[in-house]
View 1 (cartoon, helix red, strand yellow):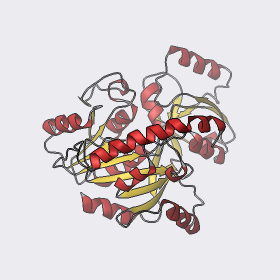
View 2 (cartoon, one colour):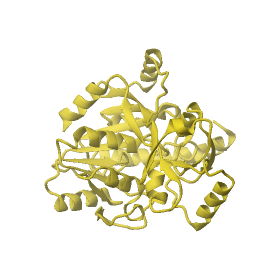
View 3 (cartoon, rainbow, N blue to C red):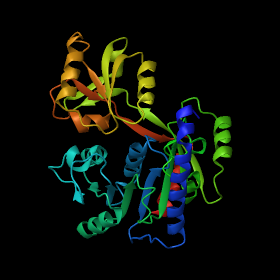
Length: 340
């Protein structure tokens, strides 16, 4: 723990005590959780920052979209609206948030709703769409006023919650003991060199309960970058310099991937979920002016693309990603299917 975090550690103890009391109030029924008749799956984490929740939501949508009428309910972080909204043909990232809008564009038959109050969101969603067979709650692990039937907890390989501390000394939103609410724990963003010995060591550290199942996943990148006009193979970009723009919590896996592909880049980093304004666009265009026509390619994430670049005349492409369950995908799929 660095010196700043040591200074903040007393505040972390206070914050941990507050969240522990809140969790206890739910556990003993002093604060009440609401259950709904539709099967409900929560995808979340204990920490702030990116653990791969969006790719996990997309994995689940891909798993069930042909069988069930589904919806995703999210807070809609970073949106410019408030209250309950059901995405429609005129919705934008500013209306519903970047991640919900990404889901809305990608999955035509998927209902997307946002509400900062999850109970109200569930009520309004089910009133508007009573035919739903399954609801996925995005980033709702700490939203205990809704009691889901299945909880999936994500923790990044290089930032395991068991090695972390409470805010503000660390990145945990609640004590590590909160992990016990999950039926499924996924160690996400695992490296390609993950082996059985490494998995065993992590399982010993996490020490899941008998009613919990531990899985490991990795992020798989596409072989091409995409925009509204077409695709471009990553092979075409070898040994070329491009402009990388990200506004996500942890862009390091994407940086590492591009380096492995021998793609040189200058990286403009913005805050997580940040909307880019005229000043930032001017800076981006200034960066491009120093490149040759061949080098004038911007690579970004899909989330950044739908938030900031979808309607802007710039040579911007996004790099698609997806979650892959390592080795035990059938066991994982069957476990989720059996719940639903």
